Image (cartoon, rainbow, N blue to C red; front, side):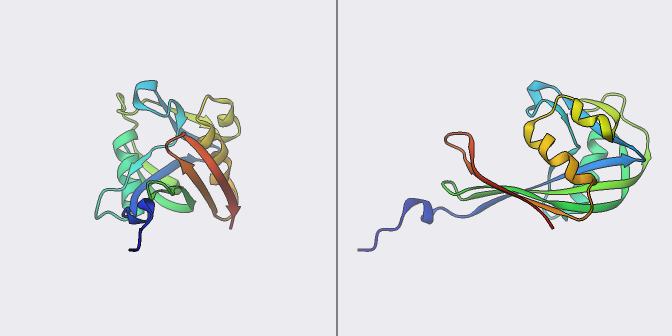
Length: 165
């Protein structure tokens, strides 16, 4: 009798997310997420892509819901993903910079206080290590790919590659 590895018998599952930094000249809009929301510190707007949205439609919607701004002129900057071989889950984030926007910032944003900050000073703010690593890639030429193998059981990255394409 052929015994299949239990991991191989699990279905592949995917989570599709976006992050979209809003750029205005030498400034970028960040969200200061409180601890109770998860991922505390300064982060870019984003979230889950709703089916059947495209990644850019999801990015535009998430920025609007979190900031009140309608973004246009999105530039695709890269893909960041974590794969967990044990659970066969792939978490993919489509990363964009919006170089045009209109509207007014929400006075009571749902994900945390909104702050326009100089791009050159943003890394001085408290932020998650993974966002601090990714942040400069949004403003460099070309696109990037971050691929990490994640161990959910031990909550650690086993292997990671960062490529500039």
